[in-house]
Length: 483
Image (cartoon, rainbow, N blue to C red):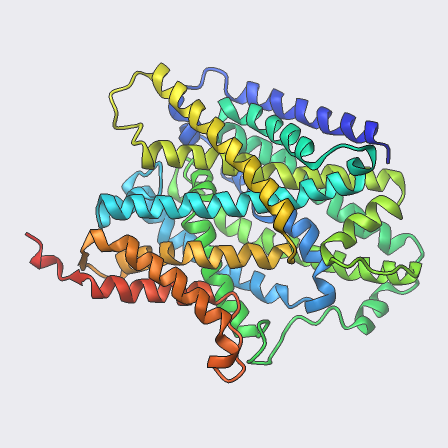
Protein backbone atom coordinates (compact mmCIF):
# COMPACT_ATOMS: atom_id res chain seq x y z
CA UNK A 1 0.00 0.00 0.00
CA UNK A 2 1.37 3.40 -0.93
CA UNK A 3 2.07 6.03 1.71
CA UNK A 4 0.05 8.58 -0.25
CA UNK A 5 -3.06 6.38 -0.13
CA UNK A 6 -2.56 5.91 3.60
CA UNK A 7 -2.24 9.65 4.22
CA UNK A 8 -5.30 10.36 2.08
CA UNK A 9 -7.29 7.81 4.11
CA UNK A 10 -6.13 9.22 7.45
CA UNK A 11 -6.91 12.83 6.51
CA UNK A 12 -10.33 11.91 5.09
CA UNK A 13 -11.10 10.10 8.32
CA UNK A 14 -9.89 13.08 10.34
CA UNK A 15 -12.05 15.46 8.29
CA UNK A 16 -15.11 13.35 9.12
CA UNK A 17 -14.26 13.52 12.84
CA UNK A 18 -13.79 17.29 12.68
CA UNK A 19 -17.19 17.65 11.03
CA UNK A 20 -18.82 15.55 13.76
CA UNK A 21 -17.07 17.63 16.44
CA UNK A 22 -18.31 20.85 14.87
CA UNK A 23 -21.84 19.58 14.34
CA UNK A 24 -22.33 18.06 17.81
CA UNK A 25 -20.87 21.02 19.71
CA UNK A 26 -22.98 23.73 18.07
CA UNK A 27 -24.72 25.84 20.69
CA UNK A 28 -23.41 23.71 23.55
CA UNK A 29 -22.33 25.38 26.78
CA UNK A 30 -19.21 24.55 28.77
CA UNK A 31 -21.14 22.09 30.97
CA UNK A 32 -21.85 19.94 27.90
CA UNK A 33 -18.11 19.28 27.55
CA UNK A 34 -18.20 17.31 30.81
CA UNK A 35 -21.63 15.67 30.80
CA UNK A 36 -23.08 15.89 27.28
CA UNK A 37 -26.07 17.66 28.90
CA UNK A 38 -27.22 14.12 29.88
CA UNK A 39 -28.94 13.73 26.51
CA UNK A 40 -26.97 10.81 25.02
CA UNK A 41 -28.95 7.90 23.56
CA UNK A 42 -28.27 4.71 25.56
CA UNK A 43 -27.94 2.43 22.52
CA UNK A 44 -25.51 4.86 20.89
CA UNK A 45 -23.34 4.91 24.02
CA UNK A 46 -23.44 1.08 24.23
CA UNK A 47 -22.29 0.66 20.65
CA UNK A 48 -19.60 3.33 20.89
CA UNK A 49 -18.21 1.84 24.11
CA UNK A 50 -17.26 -1.29 22.17
CA UNK A 51 -14.60 0.67 20.31
CA UNK A 52 -13.38 2.38 23.48
CA UNK A 53 -13.09 -0.88 25.42
CA UNK A 54 -11.42 -2.87 22.65
CA UNK A 55 -8.95 -0.32 21.26
CA UNK A 56 -5.80 -1.11 19.32
CA UNK A 57 -4.65 -3.51 22.04
CA UNK A 58 -7.49 -5.92 21.31
CA UNK A 59 -7.23 -5.31 17.56
CA UNK A 60 -3.56 -6.29 17.44
CA UNK A 61 -2.57 -8.10 20.62
CA UNK A 62 -5.50 -10.45 21.27
CA UNK A 63 -5.32 -12.19 17.84
CA UNK A 64 -1.53 -12.41 18.07
CA UNK A 65 -1.59 -13.96 21.55
CA UNK A 66 -3.79 -16.88 20.44
CA UNK A 67 -0.67 -18.90 19.59
CA UNK A 68 0.54 -18.66 23.19
CA UNK A 69 -2.69 -19.05 25.17
CA UNK A 70 -5.26 -20.36 22.64
CA UNK A 71 -8.69 -18.97 23.53
CA UNK A 72 -7.97 -18.79 27.28
CA UNK A 73 -8.50 -15.03 27.03
CA UNK A 74 -12.23 -15.71 26.71
CA UNK A 75 -12.22 -16.81 30.37
CA UNK A 76 -11.21 -13.27 31.28
CA UNK A 77 -13.86 -11.81 28.96
CA UNK A 78 -16.59 -13.90 30.62
CA UNK A 79 -15.47 -12.29 33.87
CA UNK A 80 -15.66 -8.88 32.16
CA UNK A 81 -19.30 -9.52 31.24
CA UNK A 82 -20.21 -10.45 34.82
CA UNK A 83 -18.38 -7.37 36.09
CA UNK A 84 -20.55 -5.11 33.92
CA UNK A 85 -23.63 -6.30 35.79
CA UNK A 86 -21.99 -5.18 39.04
CA UNK A 87 -21.23 -1.81 37.47
CA UNK A 88 -24.84 -1.51 36.27
CA UNK A 89 -26.57 -2.40 39.52
CA UNK A 90 -24.12 -1.30 42.23
CA UNK A 91 -22.06 1.64 40.97
CA UNK A 92 -24.37 3.35 38.47
CA UNK A 93 -27.22 3.76 41.01
CA UNK A 94 -24.70 5.32 43.41
CA UNK A 95 -23.41 7.79 40.81
CA UNK A 96 -26.88 8.81 39.64
CA UNK A 97 -28.17 9.18 43.19
CA UNK A 98 -25.30 11.52 44.06
CA UNK A 99 -25.71 13.34 40.68
CA UNK A 100 -21.98 13.17 40.02
CA UNK A 101 -20.19 14.68 37.04
CA UNK A 102 -16.87 13.24 38.21
CA UNK A 103 -17.32 9.83 39.82
CA UNK A 104 -14.51 10.59 42.28
CA UNK A 105 -16.87 13.04 43.96
CA UNK A 106 -18.10 9.96 45.85
CA UNK A 107 -14.74 9.70 47.63
CA UNK A 108 -15.03 13.30 48.78
CA UNK A 109 -18.51 12.70 50.20
CA UNK A 110 -17.52 9.39 51.81
CA UNK A 111 -14.05 10.21 53.16
CA UNK A 112 -13.01 13.80 52.47
CA UNK A 113 -10.71 15.94 50.34
CA UNK A 114 -7.49 13.93 50.71
CA UNK A 115 -9.13 10.68 49.59
CA UNK A 116 -10.90 12.53 46.79
CA UNK A 117 -7.62 13.92 45.47
CA UNK A 118 -5.90 10.55 45.94
CA UNK A 119 -8.57 8.70 43.97
CA UNK A 120 -8.65 11.18 41.12
CA UNK A 121 -4.83 11.21 40.98
CA UNK A 122 -4.81 7.40 40.71
CA UNK A 123 -7.23 7.67 37.80
CA UNK A 124 -5.11 10.31 36.08
CA UNK A 125 -2.02 8.10 36.37
CA UNK A 126 -3.91 4.95 35.33
CA UNK A 127 -5.53 6.46 32.28
CA UNK A 128 -2.42 8.33 31.20
CA UNK A 129 -0.39 5.11 31.17
CA UNK A 130 -3.14 2.88 29.78
CA UNK A 131 -4.29 5.24 27.04
CA UNK A 132 -0.82 6.08 25.81
CA UNK A 133 0.08 2.37 25.73
CA UNK A 134 -2.97 1.73 23.53
CA UNK A 135 -2.08 4.68 21.30
CA UNK A 136 1.53 3.53 21.03
CA UNK A 137 0.77 0.10 19.61
CA UNK A 138 -1.34 1.53 16.78
CA UNK A 139 1.12 4.28 15.95
CA UNK A 140 3.94 1.73 16.00
CA UNK A 141 2.17 -0.48 13.46
CA UNK A 142 1.28 2.43 11.15
CA UNK A 143 4.82 3.77 11.32
CA UNK A 144 6.69 0.46 11.04
CA UNK A 145 4.71 -1.01 8.18
CA UNK A 146 3.84 2.06 6.14
CA UNK A 147 5.90 5.15 6.92
CA UNK A 148 9.32 4.10 8.20
CA UNK A 149 10.48 2.97 4.75
CA UNK A 150 9.75 6.50 3.47
CA UNK A 151 12.09 7.99 6.05
CA UNK A 152 9.35 9.42 8.28
CA UNK A 153 10.55 9.41 11.92
CA UNK A 154 8.29 7.89 14.59
CA UNK A 155 8.11 11.14 16.53
CA UNK A 156 6.65 12.94 13.51
CA UNK A 157 4.01 10.24 13.03
CA UNK A 158 3.08 10.62 16.68
CA UNK A 159 2.94 14.42 16.57
CA UNK A 160 0.68 14.53 13.49
CA UNK A 161 -1.80 11.91 14.71
CA UNK A 162 -2.03 13.29 18.26
CA UNK A 163 -2.45 16.81 16.88
CA UNK A 164 -5.45 15.59 14.89
CA UNK A 165 -7.00 14.03 17.98
CA UNK A 166 -6.27 17.16 20.02
CA UNK A 167 -8.03 19.40 17.51
CA UNK A 168 -11.32 17.52 17.29
CA UNK A 169 -11.58 16.90 21.06
CA UNK A 170 -10.69 20.46 22.09
CA UNK A 171 -14.22 21.76 21.78
CA UNK A 172 -16.79 18.99 21.71
CA UNK A 173 -16.12 16.94 24.85
CA UNK A 174 -18.37 14.03 25.83
CA UNK A 175 -21.14 15.04 23.45
CA UNK A 176 -18.77 14.67 20.50
CA UNK A 177 -17.03 11.53 21.79
CA UNK A 178 -20.30 9.56 21.97
CA UNK A 179 -20.83 10.08 18.20
CA UNK A 180 -17.22 9.69 17.06
CA UNK A 181 -16.90 6.45 19.05
CA UNK A 182 -19.94 5.09 17.21
CA UNK A 183 -18.36 5.84 13.84
CA UNK A 184 -15.07 4.32 14.89
CA UNK A 185 -16.64 1.17 16.34
CA UNK A 186 -18.43 0.63 13.01
CA UNK A 187 -15.17 0.77 11.05
CA UNK A 188 -13.33 -1.44 13.54
CA UNK A 189 -15.98 -4.18 13.40
CA UNK A 190 -16.09 -3.92 9.61
CA UNK A 191 -12.34 -4.61 9.47
CA UNK A 192 -12.67 -7.52 11.91
CA UNK A 193 -15.56 -9.25 10.15
CA UNK A 194 -14.17 -8.49 6.68
CA UNK A 195 -10.81 -10.10 7.49
CA UNK A 196 -12.42 -13.21 8.98
CA UNK A 197 -14.66 -13.58 5.91
CA UNK A 198 -11.73 -13.20 3.52
CA UNK A 199 -9.58 -15.87 5.19
CA UNK A 200 -12.57 -18.20 5.58
CA UNK A 201 -13.67 -18.04 1.95
CA UNK A 202 -10.48 -17.35 -0.05
CA UNK A 203 -9.82 -21.08 -0.58
CA UNK A 204 -6.47 -21.31 1.22
CA UNK A 205 -8.07 -23.22 4.12
CA UNK A 206 -10.06 -26.09 2.51
CA UNK A 207 -11.90 -27.04 5.71
CA UNK A 208 -11.51 -24.19 8.20
CA UNK A 209 -13.73 -25.74 10.87
CA UNK A 210 -11.70 -28.96 10.90
CA UNK A 211 -8.40 -27.10 10.79
CA UNK A 212 -9.44 -24.91 13.71
CA UNK A 213 -10.43 -28.00 15.69
CA UNK A 214 -7.13 -29.76 14.97
CA UNK A 215 -4.97 -26.71 15.64
CA UNK A 216 -5.40 -26.75 19.41
CA UNK A 217 -5.81 -22.97 19.31
CA UNK A 218 -9.53 -22.98 20.16
CA UNK A 219 -9.18 -24.35 23.70
CA UNK A 220 -11.04 -22.01 26.05
CA UNK A 221 -10.71 -23.45 29.55
CA UNK A 222 -7.48 -23.97 31.49
CA UNK A 223 -7.77 -26.07 34.68
CA UNK A 224 -4.10 -25.96 35.78
CA UNK A 225 -4.30 -24.12 39.12
CA UNK A 226 -0.64 -23.05 38.93
CA UNK A 227 -1.04 -21.44 35.50
CA UNK A 228 -1.66 -17.73 35.04
CA UNK A 229 -4.45 -18.82 32.67
CA UNK A 230 -6.31 -20.94 35.29
CA UNK A 231 -10.06 -20.59 34.74
CA UNK A 232 -11.13 -19.32 38.16
CA UNK A 233 -8.18 -16.91 38.33
CA UNK A 234 -9.14 -15.47 34.96
CA UNK A 235 -12.87 -15.35 35.70
CA UNK A 236 -12.55 -13.58 39.05
CA UNK A 237 -9.82 -11.27 37.73
CA UNK A 238 -12.03 -10.35 34.78
CA UNK A 239 -14.86 -9.37 37.10
CA UNK A 240 -12.67 -7.08 39.18
CA UNK A 241 -10.83 -5.66 36.16
CA UNK A 242 -14.17 -4.51 34.77
CA UNK A 243 -15.32 -3.04 38.07
CA UNK A 244 -12.03 -1.15 38.36
CA UNK A 245 -11.25 -0.22 34.75
CA UNK A 246 -14.84 0.64 33.81
CA UNK A 247 -16.87 1.25 36.96
CA UNK A 248 -14.13 3.33 38.60
CA UNK A 249 -12.85 4.96 35.42
CA UNK A 250 -13.97 8.49 34.65
CA UNK A 251 -13.54 8.04 30.89
CA UNK A 252 -15.88 5.06 30.71
CA UNK A 253 -18.39 6.26 33.27
CA UNK A 254 -18.75 9.81 31.98
CA UNK A 255 -20.28 8.35 28.82
CA UNK A 256 -22.75 6.31 30.87
CA UNK A 257 -23.53 9.33 33.01
CA UNK A 258 -24.31 11.33 29.87
CA UNK A 259 -27.43 9.16 29.44
CA UNK A 260 -30.56 10.86 30.79
CA UNK A 261 -31.88 8.25 33.24
CA UNK A 262 -30.46 5.44 35.37
CA UNK A 263 -32.58 2.66 33.78
CA UNK A 264 -31.35 3.66 30.31
CA UNK A 265 -27.73 3.77 31.51
CA UNK A 266 -28.14 0.29 33.02
CA UNK A 267 -29.67 -1.00 29.81
CA UNK A 268 -26.67 0.42 27.95
CA UNK A 269 -24.18 -1.44 30.17
CA UNK A 270 -26.01 -4.79 30.02
CA UNK A 271 -26.36 -4.71 26.22
CA UNK A 272 -22.74 -3.68 25.93
CA UNK A 273 -21.59 -6.64 28.10
CA UNK A 274 -23.19 -9.09 25.65
CA UNK A 275 -21.83 -7.35 22.55
CA UNK A 276 -18.34 -7.22 24.10
CA UNK A 277 -18.32 -10.98 24.72
CA UNK A 278 -19.34 -11.73 21.12
CA UNK A 279 -16.82 -9.27 19.69
CA UNK A 280 -13.90 -10.69 21.66
CA UNK A 281 -14.85 -14.17 20.49
CA UNK A 282 -14.55 -12.90 16.92
CA UNK A 283 -11.09 -11.48 17.65
CA UNK A 284 -9.98 -14.86 19.02
CA UNK A 285 -11.40 -16.58 15.94
CA UNK A 286 -9.48 -14.10 13.81
CA UNK A 287 -6.26 -14.90 15.68
CA UNK A 288 -6.57 -18.64 15.05
CA UNK A 289 -7.37 -18.03 11.38
CA UNK A 290 -4.38 -15.72 11.00
CA UNK A 291 -2.02 -18.43 12.26
CA UNK A 292 -3.61 -21.02 9.97
CA UNK A 293 -3.29 -18.60 7.06
CA UNK A 294 0.37 -17.97 7.87
CA UNK A 295 0.92 -21.72 7.93
CA UNK A 296 -0.73 -22.20 4.56
CA UNK A 297 1.59 -19.54 3.09
CA UNK A 298 4.65 -21.14 4.68
CA UNK A 299 5.57 -17.91 6.47
CA UNK A 300 8.07 -17.53 9.27
CA UNK A 301 6.12 -16.05 12.15
CA UNK A 302 7.12 -12.59 13.40
CA UNK A 303 9.24 -12.47 16.56
CA UNK A 304 6.55 -10.40 18.28
CA UNK A 305 3.04 -11.85 18.20
CA UNK A 306 1.60 -8.33 18.06
CA UNK A 307 3.04 -8.02 14.53
CA UNK A 308 1.20 -11.03 13.06
CA UNK A 309 -2.01 -9.29 12.00
CA UNK A 310 -0.36 -6.21 10.44
CA UNK A 311 2.25 -8.37 8.67
CA UNK A 312 -0.40 -10.47 6.93
CA UNK A 313 -2.81 -7.60 6.29
CA UNK A 314 -0.28 -5.25 4.75
CA UNK A 315 2.12 -7.64 3.04
CA UNK A 316 0.13 -10.71 2.00
CA UNK A 317 -3.55 -9.76 1.79
CA UNK A 318 -5.06 -7.89 -1.19
CA UNK A 319 -4.59 -4.12 -1.21
CA UNK A 320 -8.29 -3.46 -0.54
CA UNK A 321 -8.17 -5.61 2.60
CA UNK A 322 -4.99 -3.86 3.70
CA UNK A 323 -6.84 -0.56 3.40
CA UNK A 324 -9.74 -1.96 5.43
CA UNK A 325 -7.20 -3.06 8.06
CA UNK A 326 -5.69 0.43 8.24
CA UNK A 327 -9.13 2.04 8.60
CA UNK A 328 -9.98 -0.45 11.34
CA UNK A 329 -6.66 0.19 13.05
CA UNK A 330 -7.15 3.95 12.97
CA UNK A 331 -10.66 3.40 14.29
CA UNK A 332 -9.13 1.43 17.16
CA UNK A 333 -6.66 4.23 17.85
CA UNK A 334 -8.96 7.23 17.98
CA UNK A 335 -11.42 5.99 20.67
CA UNK A 336 -8.45 5.11 22.90
CA UNK A 337 -7.08 8.61 22.57
CA UNK A 338 -10.05 10.95 22.26
CA UNK A 339 -12.05 9.58 25.20
CA UNK A 340 -8.97 9.45 27.43
CA UNK A 341 -7.91 12.99 26.51
CA UNK A 342 -11.40 14.30 27.25
CA UNK A 343 -11.74 12.33 30.50
CA UNK A 344 -8.32 13.34 31.81
CA UNK A 345 -9.07 16.98 31.02
CA UNK A 346 -12.44 16.75 32.77
CA UNK A 347 -11.04 14.94 35.81
CA UNK A 348 -8.13 17.32 36.27
CA UNK A 349 -10.33 20.40 35.88
CA UNK A 350 -13.10 19.16 38.18
CA UNK A 351 -11.22 17.02 40.71
CA UNK A 352 -7.83 18.67 41.01
CA UNK A 353 -8.51 22.32 40.08
CA UNK A 354 -12.10 22.38 41.37
CA UNK A 355 -13.12 24.43 38.35
CA UNK A 356 -16.85 24.04 39.05
CA UNK A 357 -16.51 25.54 42.55
CA UNK A 358 -14.50 28.59 41.52
CA UNK A 359 -16.16 31.90 40.79
CA UNK A 360 -14.86 32.04 37.24
CA UNK A 361 -16.97 33.16 34.34
CA UNK A 362 -17.50 30.72 31.48
CA UNK A 363 -14.85 32.36 29.30
CA UNK A 364 -12.15 31.80 31.93
CA UNK A 365 -13.30 28.22 32.53
CA UNK A 366 -12.95 27.53 28.81
CA UNK A 367 -9.44 29.05 28.73
CA UNK A 368 -8.31 26.97 31.70
CA UNK A 369 -9.89 23.79 30.36
CA UNK A 370 -8.24 24.25 26.95
CA UNK A 371 -4.86 24.86 28.61
CA UNK A 372 -5.22 21.64 30.62
CA UNK A 373 -6.29 19.83 27.45
CA UNK A 374 -3.14 21.03 25.69
CA UNK A 375 -0.81 19.99 28.52
CA UNK A 376 -2.32 16.50 28.66
CA UNK A 377 -1.95 16.14 24.88
CA UNK A 378 1.78 16.91 25.26
CA UNK A 379 2.01 14.33 28.07
CA UNK A 380 0.39 11.80 25.73
CA UNK A 381 3.10 12.49 23.17
CA UNK A 382 5.90 12.12 25.71
CA UNK A 383 4.52 8.81 27.03
CA UNK A 384 4.04 7.38 23.52
CA UNK A 385 7.65 8.19 22.69
CA UNK A 386 8.80 6.61 25.95
CA UNK A 387 6.95 3.37 25.13
CA UNK A 388 8.52 3.43 21.68
CA UNK A 389 11.97 3.50 23.20
CA UNK A 390 11.30 1.03 26.00
CA UNK A 391 8.42 -1.32 25.07
CA UNK A 392 9.32 -4.98 24.51
CA UNK A 393 6.45 -6.99 26.02
CA UNK A 394 3.13 -8.25 24.73
CA UNK A 395 0.95 -5.16 24.99
CA UNK A 396 -2.17 -6.82 26.39
CA UNK A 397 -0.21 -8.17 29.38
CA UNK A 398 1.54 -4.87 29.98
CA UNK A 399 -1.78 -3.04 29.98
CA UNK A 400 -3.31 -5.26 32.65
CA UNK A 401 -0.12 -5.17 34.72
CA UNK A 402 -0.39 -1.38 34.81
CA UNK A 403 -4.08 -1.60 35.68
CA UNK A 404 -3.39 -3.96 38.59
CA UNK A 405 -0.93 -1.50 40.12
CA UNK A 406 -2.85 1.75 39.63
CA UNK A 407 -6.51 0.69 39.83
CA UNK A 408 -6.06 -1.65 42.82
CA UNK A 409 -5.98 1.09 45.49
CA UNK A 410 -8.91 2.82 43.77
CA UNK A 411 -10.92 -0.41 43.92
CA UNK A 412 -10.01 -0.77 47.60
CA UNK A 413 -11.14 2.78 48.40
CA UNK A 414 -14.56 2.23 46.85
CA UNK A 415 -15.00 -1.28 48.27
CA UNK A 416 -14.20 -0.17 51.80
CA UNK A 417 -16.39 2.93 51.48
CA UNK A 418 -19.41 0.99 50.21
CA UNK A 419 -19.04 -2.01 52.56
CA UNK A 420 -18.47 -0.12 55.82
CA UNK A 421 -19.39 3.07 57.61
CA UNK A 422 -16.04 3.53 59.35
CA UNK A 423 -14.17 6.78 58.92
CA UNK A 424 -10.45 6.92 58.10
CA UNK A 425 -7.57 9.13 59.16
CA UNK A 426 -7.37 10.86 55.83
CA UNK A 427 -3.77 11.99 55.90
CA UNK A 428 -2.70 8.33 55.88
CA UNK A 429 -4.81 7.32 52.86
CA UNK A 430 -2.12 8.08 50.22
CA UNK A 431 0.42 6.04 52.24
CA UNK A 432 -1.96 3.06 52.42
CA UNK A 433 -2.49 3.20 48.64
CA UNK A 434 1.25 3.37 48.00
CA UNK A 435 1.98 0.40 50.29
CA UNK A 436 -0.81 -1.66 48.67
CA UNK A 437 0.43 -1.00 45.14
CA UNK A 438 4.05 -1.74 45.98
CA UNK A 439 3.26 -4.78 48.13
CA UNK A 440 1.02 -6.45 45.55
CA UNK A 441 3.60 -5.87 42.82
CA UNK A 442 6.37 -7.49 44.90
CA UNK A 443 4.09 -10.45 45.69
CA UNK A 444 3.44 -10.97 42.00
CA UNK A 445 7.13 -10.87 41.13
CA UNK A 446 7.98 -13.51 43.75
CA UNK A 447 4.75 -15.54 43.77
CA UNK A 448 6.19 -18.75 42.28
CA UNK A 449 8.87 -18.95 45.00
CA UNK A 450 6.52 -17.97 47.82
CA UNK A 451 3.49 -20.11 46.90
CA UNK A 452 4.86 -23.46 45.71
CA UNK A 453 4.86 -22.64 42.01
CA UNK A 454 1.60 -20.68 41.96
CA UNK A 455 1.99 -17.65 39.71
CA UNK A 456 -0.05 -14.56 40.43
CA UNK A 457 -1.54 -13.14 37.24
CA UNK A 458 -4.21 -10.52 36.72
CA UNK A 459 -5.61 -11.29 40.19
CA UNK A 460 -2.88 -9.02 41.57
CA UNK A 461 -5.52 -6.30 41.13
CA UNK A 462 -7.67 -8.06 43.75
CA UNK A 463 -4.71 -8.54 46.09
CA UNK A 464 -3.86 -4.85 45.72
CA UNK A 465 -7.43 -3.84 46.58
CA UNK A 466 -7.53 -6.26 49.53
CA UNK A 467 -4.31 -4.80 50.99
CA UNK A 468 -5.82 -1.33 50.56
CA UNK A 469 -8.97 -2.38 52.44
CA UNK A 470 -6.91 -3.87 55.29
CA UNK A 471 -4.85 -0.69 55.47
CA UNK A 472 -7.95 1.50 55.55
CA UNK A 473 -9.42 -0.67 58.30
CA UNK A 474 -6.24 -0.22 60.37
CA UNK A 475 -6.34 3.59 60.06
CA UNK A 476 -10.10 3.82 60.60
CA UNK A 477 -12.41 4.34 63.55
CA UNK A 478 -16.17 3.88 64.03
CA UNK A 479 -18.20 6.70 62.51
CA UNK A 480 -19.88 7.42 65.85
CA UNK A 481 -16.47 8.41 67.26
CA UNK A 482 -16.14 11.27 64.77
CA UNK A 483 -16.60 14.60 66.49
